[in-house]
Length: 203
Image (cartoon, rainbow, N blue to C red; front, top):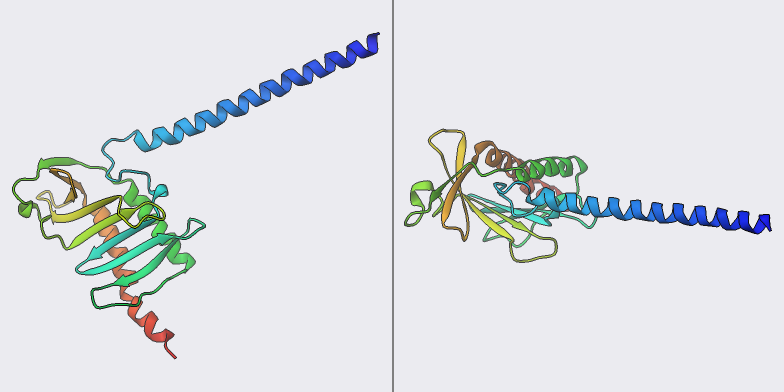
């Protein structure tokens, strides 16, 4: 009689342990989901509407040249190429070093915070956002319509901030100017090498 009782006790102990383990796994999973959700909402002054990890593409128009950066199916950033009104061809770059640079630049841009806000006024011309030379568009993965669009305006009087209009909003904000400088340094470096890359690819 003692042997069956011993087995039943052992089974009961293992059952309790299994329940405890399952509870721990569920609680940890729930906490991770909550933390991820909180991370995207904890800073209401963040410029981007979602974390940069949830973007599929970023387009930067610089003086009429549209540069597109995308994530591949593995989540790795690559340079999609330069597009102008007269161009029908473009390049795709899978350079690992470039991918790391794009990722660092986009991660930094994802941390951009709004500093100050001002009423838009009649057309935003005083801030340089009515006819901007730089426009940034961000996309969710697989989407053709941008999630958000940003018109980058003049350097602010403090010389360290830039005016930016989130298209569709009635206010102009300032953001750290170095964030715009980082984006422009990236597009001008890769854009400048796009034409030679295409030329060298011709037979």
